[in-house]
Image 1 (tube, rainbow, N blue to C red):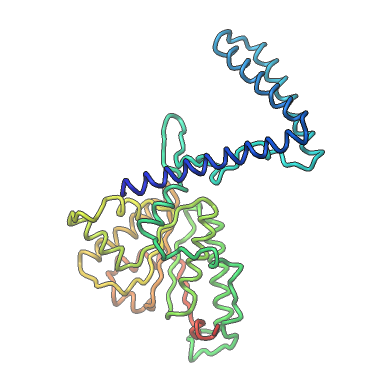
Image 2: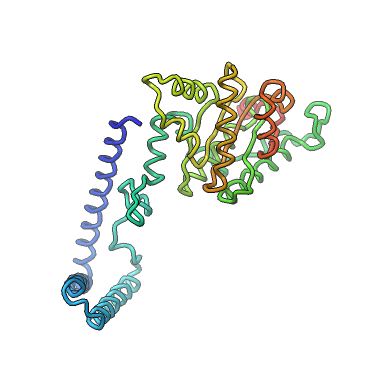
Amino acid sequence: MNNTILKNLLYEYEQIRLKASKDLELRKKDLYSKIPELFDLENQISSLAITASKSLISENNKKILDNLQRDIENLKAKRNDILKKNNIPEDYLYLNFLCDKCKDTGYITSDNNTIMCNCLKQKIFDIEYNKSNISNLKNQNFSNFISTVYSECVDKQKYNSDISPRKNIELIKNICIDFINNFDDPNEKNLLFTGNTGLGKTFLSSCIANELLLNGKTVLYQTAPVMLDAIIDYRFGKETASNTIYNNLLDVDLLIIDDLGTECMNNMKFTELFNIINTRLLNQNNKPTKTIISTNLSLQNLFKTYDERIVSRIVGNYNICRFFGDDIRFIKR
């Protein structure tokens, strides 16, 4: 990881916290001018809290601490009653964090162990790997999913299916929603999207990514050619490559491998692709990590193109979603 990137992001977090503090002070100033009683209550609560802290350090008297704590809770209850009567939410007098987990610091400390928060990890992923690939996620969500652009005609000879493209895409959408809802379940399978271009594979991948990001998960998007080239560069120790790319490919909550089948394969890349797929499957024993693979190749062509070990892992551990129909990019126009 580029240290400059991390430094800039931590500065960004600092500015976010400073703005939140200034906004809180402005809210307090405005509110106290309208309801002076709240200002008096806040001062009393702060004074008792300081007294309780000193008592804890110097006397360690449980009875005194209990009485102080009871008085503080009573004052807070009185404050909340005033807020409620004035239709003001209870958290109005608290800092508003973009990330409640790390309090906009980028790091979480638990049991004397400090780790990077997922929100900071994702910002690094977006800058170093995802770039523009998943930057338009706000518009790529299930609320913008329109199944009516798919044909409702059943044509077994044309589509090799007993259902229409519309019915098929609605079934795939339901599989995607189940994937999101059961993401932390180790038994929930990964996803393989197969089918021609222009049928919604990338859109649905982005819909899933968008929902999981909202749920605090990390998402890393890579096309198969770029991913495999980056791994080979890392293996050969090129200066531009870093071991973080390999570790992140293994550990990220959701890895999206797009355009599988467009890369130039050799034995080394076969091995690395298998390692990524297999290791992420094994990770599910401790941490749920899921993968979405998108390809224009049919399942039959996957068997022809890739090592049997790779395809067997996919067939056994992925829900295979076959996209078919007419190119919706032209239909929408």
